[in-house]
Length: 135
Image 1 (cartoon, rainbow, N blue to C red):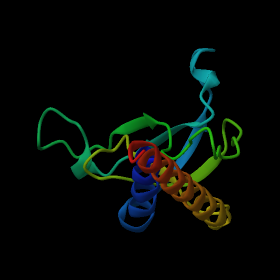
Image 2: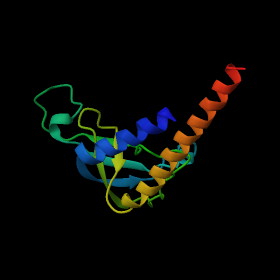
Image 3: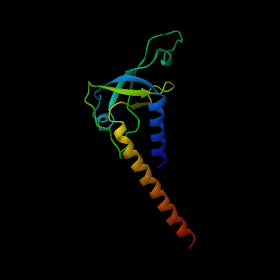
Image 4: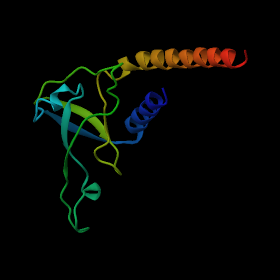
């Protein structure tokens, strides 16, 4: 549950404070990687963020990454390879990226549902554990 809460917080932080770019969905290079439900995205970072060896380099760096927040409980719709999607990435860690744009607002009720279900399950489990320890 803590992992899901951290993923949710990271997604919301990157959607609000990340650098918005357009990414291209690329096909998975190997069949093993194709089992991952998140699409593989290619996008260019800002020149200042680039991972260049020399600090004077002004070329943007191309990054391949998968968006965060694709848990087994809520899998995003798989965009087709070759399509463009809007993303936001972390300028300090360019491979940390989340999907933005259409369809994101529709995930909010599901996120709230899973948070409430997880919190109530945790409360129920802790009360059963406390009852068992007090006997």
